[in-house]
Image (cartoon, rainbow over all chains, first blue to last red; front, side):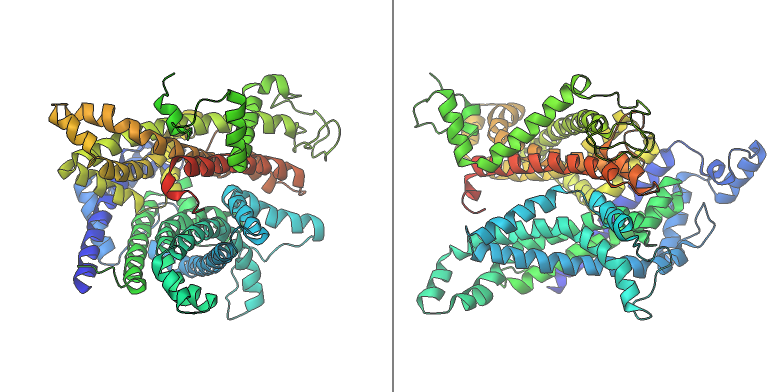
Length: 315
Length: 299
């Protein structure tokens, strides 16, 4: 197991190396001079040249890349080209908000998705099953950006209600205000992934319930509840977990839109704003950062499979 | 009469004698009612998109059709936006943009992804590993953010939106097709083709590719929904299809940023997106049930 984790971590490093080179090169070949963007169109040619020199943009690419990498590895993430603020500090300020949103979303996704999937499989072909399946296909079809817009606009129109906007209230200062800020966003963000998890849990559980060992468990007189909870569910959980890993990356993408709509000052909003103003140092650092998070999450889920299914042995 | 492979792929069993077309259609509808519903939804939206100039009561950008922010009425069934443009006409024209972006991007992306997946899966070895490592790197990253970065660099235009969405779906298609090729290439018919001296290219494209077609059709249908959602997201964030083209996503964003709040403005473009994606999802589910016997009855 340890050898497996070490090998996967090494593979992860290789993946991140490619990712860093890709984003570095893409941003360098991009039209638009960061120095000019920073100074604005009224800057003189001399000012732009001096700014290019100051930002180190005249150095060979390999020098620029090693300078960036050296910074990343020593914890110096540099400063934003746009605001001049330390990227590390911005990440530190925004990370708790994104983490709260993602944790809430993941909990909701798993809770709703797996519960609905099990209900649907256990009461297969009943009206309950049909209702859950219709909701699931709707959940996959309705765009989160639209739902989020309506969640904000409808209460505003009908009751003149708006959630506290702008500054984030910390959970421990005022739990209720904090939940009013985060919960609607998390629910909207969770619906799509929850629908995907539900459908997969349902088909996976039905598949497992057809197997011989389930018949054996029933034949020896176990109650249906025990058969499903103890015997079937554990094996049925592997495909949904795989999809959860894939959904996690999609969640990070979705959080860009959702944080924007709900004006939650998180990493997603930071990322989008940096892309919008072509703030290259921030974009490349956040890209690498997101890559690290995704690689580690997928590794964690691979380890979770082994715990769920003892037949899976990593060498 | 010979049965063509395409008909086998569409789930019309070989052993059943050919029935007249209406009865066969009826049988399909009865067997996959939701799939038929999805098909009807998509067909209707295609008709609306193709004949938008004839159907839409007003031009997309005609200002002052009714007072700004009019509600639902006989003249403007979907209301108007802040410039008094008719939302029904904008939603109808939006279907044309949304569906053409979706279809072109997905057809292009699926063809490219299928070709690469076929080669990667059949060749194996260093080519395959190189492609897989590149995919790992790309997929270690949220697709939406990737699209945003690329389109910000290329600049938002209709062509670039199609291009990035097409590029965005390639990795997923390669993965799925490659997996199918790996199990397909151990079949006896591949062995036989190799024994009579067929070149690798011939084996890939003449022998294996037809057996992957059904899978490719299923992937394409599901991806069409994804592509429509992606276009809406890019346009919503202001990096998608630029004005004066109408876009459902851009209209929702405009409605969100406008005061006073006017619900119909945001409501109908979103309903249109949902209906489109729902149609593709229902059709995709039915096609998967029909074409992939392993999943039959499991869903």
